[in-house]
Length: 118
Image (cartoon, rainbow, N blue to C red; front, side, top):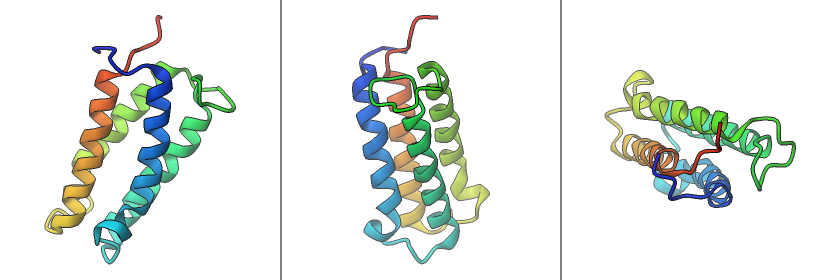
């Protein structure tokens, strides 16, 4: 909405976010929680191909319009905000807080990214 994050920086954040979230269960100490770990791996694993296929500076195949990518990020962030309760790991403080933190970071990146003109 505010357009503070240009597309190239958004691309860098996408790849860094995906790598960080992939390793988060082990690094942050919740790898023993199967649901939280699976959610983390699925979200991180889905970000990589989405980023590779986005029409932005760091995309490789460039099939997904950038604004559609932002919508996918937004939906993923919403899923992350709900996941601890929907998937039953809300009482696991490390898993819940990590998931919410990654979701809030993603949501912030979406809201601050400059959209492509329609």
